[in-house]
Amino acid sequence: MMNIHRKWIVPALTVFLLLAGYLVTLKPVFLHRNGEWTRMLTHASTVAVVLREAGIVLEDDKRTTPDAGAPVQWGMTIEVPDSNAGIAVSYHGGTSYVGYPGDGKISVRELLERAGIRLADGEWVFADGEPVRPDTVLAAPPRVLAIRPAVEFLLLEDGQTTRYAAPGPTVGEALWQAGITLHAADQVVPAPATPLDSLGPAPAVIEVTRSRPYEILADGKSVSARAAGKTVGEVLAAAGFALTGLDYSIPAEGEPPPPDGRIRIVRVREEILREQSQIEFERETVPLPDLELDQTKVVQGGAYGILESILRIRYEDGVETARISEGRQIVLPPQNRIVGYGTQVVVRSADTPDGPIEYYRAITVYATSYSPCRLGVTPPRCNNITHSGKTLQKGMIAMVLRWYYLFQGQGVYVEGYGPATVEDSGVGPNAPYWIDLAYLDDEYVAWHQNTTLYFLTPVPANVPWILP
Image 1 (cartoon, rainbow, N blue to C red):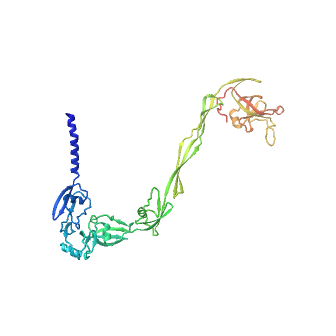
Image 2: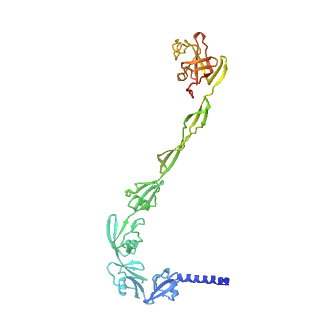
Image 3: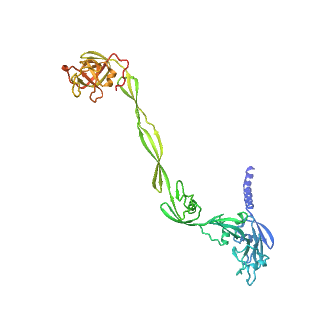
């Protein structure tokens, strides 16, 4: 049973919706004929179809208002003349009809007087939309005569104000009716399509800014254009040229238009340039208690950082005009190189030709030798007193001054020379580490070679971890 109901409900609902849609889209129109009003509901698209639906057939010389080809609007009124109606006369919101004489020799004013209408001062007559003078003799009967009152308005142009009166109904028509010729590029405020009766109490003010020819230089081209505007910016906008972004004009867009009519547009763009450079890393040393004395170990490898400089480059008409620094920023910070040096003292022993020794540090040095009269000074002279104040003899060595202050009196063993103490200072050759071996003049042995220097125990209280 439920399926049977569904079978009939769907078609019935469809028919109902179609009928409802048909009724809702009907348009009401009103026919006015021979003083009688008739209301109709119609789907007709034009006035001619409405007349056909109403069974009205017009004679060839009769016309409806609006015309038979006009589209049907919701609630519109259609004026239908009867066979004796004649010319439709629209006056003060009403419509009447007047006959046209057979000989056709009648003026507009006389035709209106036949319709019982006497023109007042300032009223204009329009025959089928075209203005005609009241004394004009009609050569053929118009379909419609319309009488419109003139509306006063003030024309503001070039700082001067002039009073006019015209029926309009728009600003543009009123200006034309007043004999004011406009160029297509002229500016009119309010716009020409604005109804006169929307401008408020008379006299309304209509401002006209006349256009003039301009030569506009933009994008490498010269363009002639006619435009109106109180400022350069308004002229450019009216001529279809836009200032976008950083663009500017010469003269500036806020200035009055130039007397010579030449305006230049400068196209401006900017680019951001990022330049990168290296940041040097620093070097650090740290003590490593688990690393033996005089040994080193890289704790952290060094890495260059990246410094970025930002430049704003300005181009005007494709030509670079400025470079502006926007500052710098560190994109990647540098990483310091860290080298550890050993601080662990290890005491070792060794057998030498001079007997066993016990030492805590052994380094390779470049050794030279000297004696009281072989000091290597100019002019030559002799001296047997050491820096420490002792008398020079074999078993003493000299070091550069900074080493001397660290190791003065320290017991050492020099391979190939024997045991010695640090008692003197001097200036040696350009070598990383250097010592000078003391001899007496009659025992002198020339040294110019590398050898091993052992620092003997006991270990001093303040061991220099890094040799300068």
